[in-house]
Amino acid sequence: MEDIITLKNIYYSYFGKIAALKNINLSVKKGEMVAVIGLNGSGKSTLLNIINALIFPDSGEFLLKGNPVTEKSLSDKNFGMTLRQSMGYIFQNPEIQLFCPTVFDELLFAPLQLNMPVGDAEERAEKTLSFLGIEYLKDRPVLMLSGGEKKKVAIASVLTMNPEILLIDEPLASLDPKTQTFFIDLLLELNRSGKTIIFTTHHLDLIDHLQPKVVVLSEDHTIQKTGTSSEILNDQEFLISVNLIHEHIHKHGDEVHKHYHSHYVFHKH
Ligand SMILES: Nc1ncnc2c1ncn2[C@@H]1O[C@H](COP(=O)(O)OP(=O)(O)OP(=O)(O)O)[C@@H](O)[C@H]1O
Ligand SMILES: [Mg+2]
Figure 1 (tube, rainbow, N blue to C red):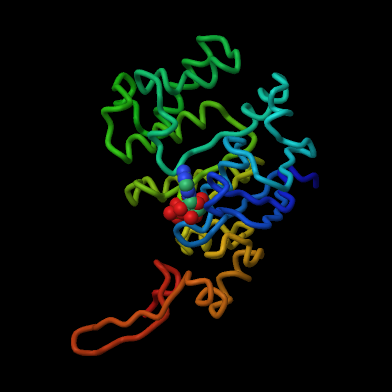
Figure 2: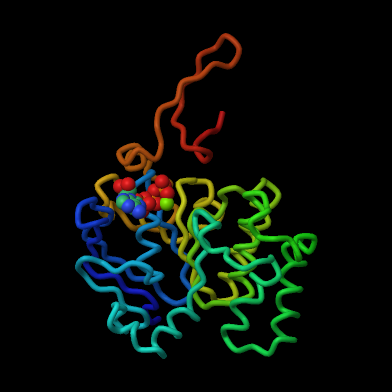
């Protein structure tokens, strides 16, 4: 199967000073689901920003379907359009991506940009609102929503675009438990239907649910390990070494209890 995304020896630093990614090599096949995990500041969001061509590496190469993505190659209108159409990005902070006056305008934006007839775009937007259970937000100004509502609108606006590749930074952040479950099922369904999905998380339970290929970024901003979900989750020693799980001591009544703790998976009594 062809590589849809290839990263070769990527190095990125903010302002040439703050290293965020070092020596990143990664290939993602069409239809693959990939999780990028790592602690705060390890470089997860930076990696998605590079894949979305919002920033460009200091050195190394990023290829989309074998075509180099650079500031220069993107100045070609057709290539720029192809890249924008093929990727939908749900940001860690949805406020960055919401800019239209109302929720409905937000959902219409991408289909209209892609030259879909207005009637069809409206139908798609209506369907997406009802699919996500947020019809009641349709005419609301985007800036007057709760954090979780903004996240749902951000998800909806990417779904109306129907991209081939989904980039999702912290999928579960700010969603309530019911919506988290819904979104996890949706990601599985989208992946089954052939979408390539790259997401970031530090929640190991999400890896357990979705069983993606896993890329572990370490605190020194390099890829520490790549493997299947079970290879990564079963390697307790490795997870401790990269601080993704830690020893946790707490009390049950008067009894002191000690066990390894991630924010879910290994927390079993
Ligand atoms: N806009 C920025 N300007 C300067 N440095 C930045 C900027 N954004 C991120 N960094 C730095 O780059 C490194 C990687 O940050 P990044 O946001 O990619 O981490 P992350 O893995 O997504 O973290 P988190 O889990 O907190 O979201 C960190 O050291 C961070 O301080
Ligand atoms: Mg981040």
